[in-house]
Structure formats: C-alpha cells, structure tokens
Length: 374
Ligand SMILES: *Cc1c(COP(=O)(O)O)cnc(C)c1O
Image 1 (cartoon, rainbow, N blue to C red):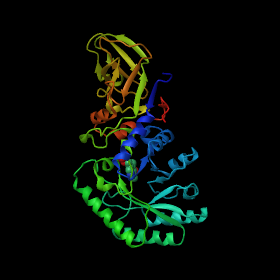
Image 2: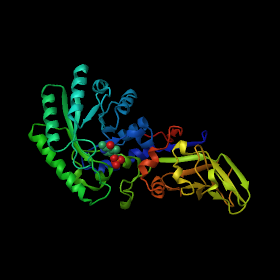
Image 3: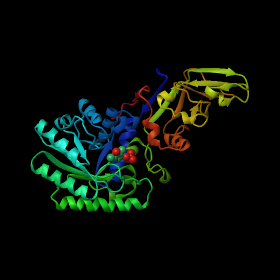
Image 4: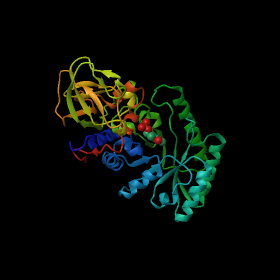
C-alpha cells in the first residue's frame, strides 16, 4: 500500500450484482443508482461497471452528478431524481439528461430551459404515493399531469417516465407498501387516461426489486444492492457481493505498559503490558467517531476492537500478545470472506444502515480498482 488508507472497489462485484438484479427484474430494465459518488464507490468507475453488468440507465440525485457523467463520456440515459430551483436545466437538456419533475413550478422552469436550449426536455413525473417527501398527490398530481401533457403537446417536453419511491420497502409486509402500489397504479391510470405515453414507469428501489415482483413495472432503480449490500438485512444477502473493502496500513506499532490510557479522554486503558497499533484512518476519513471502543477491524488475522476514541486522522487498536509490522494491512470492513467485518456489521453496531457506512467514506481515502473490472 502506498497510501495510509484506501477503499478497494471490486468492479466485477458491481457488474455481477447488477447481473443478479437484472435476472430478478424479470425483463424490467435496470437503472443503477450512482448518486453520492456511487454510494462512495466512485461515480464514473461504478457507473461503467454497472453498465457492463447490464444496467441500461443511470440514476443520480443531483444534476451536477449527471453532468459529471456526461463530461466523462457516459452517454447512457441518466435520470436526475431530485428537483431543486435554479439548477442549470438548460445544460441538462443540451446534454440529454432526464429530469424528475415533482412540482408545476419546476415544470415551468424546465420548459423555459428547453425553450432556451431549442429542444424538448425529457422528464419523469414524480408521484407522491405515500412517502410524503418528493412529488405530488391528489389534485396537485392531476394539475402536474395536465400541465406536463400540455407542454408535451407544445413540444417543450417529452413526458418519458413516471415514478415514485417507497418509504418502507425494506420491511416486507409493511402495510404502506401495498398502499403505495395502489396509489401508484391509480395515479398512473389518471395520467394514461389523460393521454400520457410513458416509456418507463418505475417505483422499485433495491428492496422492492428483490422482494416485490409486482413493483417492477418497466424499470427498477437499485442502489445499495448494486454495491453488494443487502437492502433487507433480516432477509439475508440475496447472493450479493459487497464491492468495497476499506483497508489501512499500520502506521506505528509499539509496546506500552499496563494501565496506559489510550487516545483522547483515556476512555480505554490497557489491562496488561501490551502492543498497540496506530491505524491511519479517522473521522476525517469517514470512520464514525461513535465507533470508538465499539467497531472491530481485522488485524493480523484477528478481530480487534477500536481502543479508545476515533480521532480525526487515526485510531488505535490493542494487539494484546500479538504484533504487527508498520505497514501491515488492516482490514476495516469488506465482503467478510476473510473474517473481516462487513459494512452491514458496522452499521448494526452503530445503529445505522450500511448505506451510511460506505457513503460517508471521505474524499481523502483514495478509491482503487484492483483487477480493473470488465
Ligand atoms: C437512492 C434512490 C434509489 C435506490 O435506493 P436503494 O435503497 O439504495 O436501492 C432509488 N430511487 C431513488 C429515487 C433514489 O433516490
């Protein structure tokens, strides 16, 4: 290792996970969600791996992410899922980026951008079927559909898709799931009766794509599953392979006497004469400070718990009777097949979700792509 810490991303795992999702999608297209730096895995690299694995669309949250894909030469259909005022929508239209529209004011803004760009904007209407986050419902849905179809008739937009998002798809059997599916079907019905001809109707995230065949429609939008992490921990791994392995090189290994207080606040004391190793990754790299005295890592083939507080740039582990050489590799989390913790295990220990563990790994940690991918 030439850096203190790195996140190794197995691009073949991403490709294989997309392949598995495609099989489970039963003919529906796969939009790989690559927002937030592809959940920390690297936007452009992960997008390439997902496309190689059979995804035919990419999804991002923010327009800047889509424009970065275009700048990198990625021309596949790409949907921006979050609509906010004042974005450079003219650039989106010029670069053939699909836009999600969940409000009439946003439609108006995009229509004006399309007029400036001199071509229609491709949009997906966002229905609020019960998450009460983005999109509209009730009369507002009817108004949005009517306004969008009018803009389509006038050549300012192409209403390419209709979408919604589940609140509780990771809890199979939750009553809101059936309620949201029912609302989606009803809202689709209104739009189609009003004359909408959608290319793609979509509502399924990873959890729904894997557990809810009736939610697949024309396209599924998996994120976390593409990176090999389970969207429904209680239901197992679905055969997915975690793509990210976070490693660090032991920075310093030294003997200390019994009773030594370790790291800020001395929240850990050595019980006996022992060997400590300094691991050069801290909360400035995205290691949660709440993981102090809690999270485990794999060092010298054994699990060790972080000793004392996680600092900005480093933390300490107590090797007991073992030792390491400076530079030896310590695995913080990974697929788990060598005995290391998984991101899911870290998430459970911290009371969060695996999404946050991989996404928060900071820009100071280089992403490397051993094997290169297909
Ligand atoms: C992030 C996101 C997804 C993917 O969710 P996962 O649970 O990671 O599969 C799907 N759709 C939208 C609109 C999203 O923002």
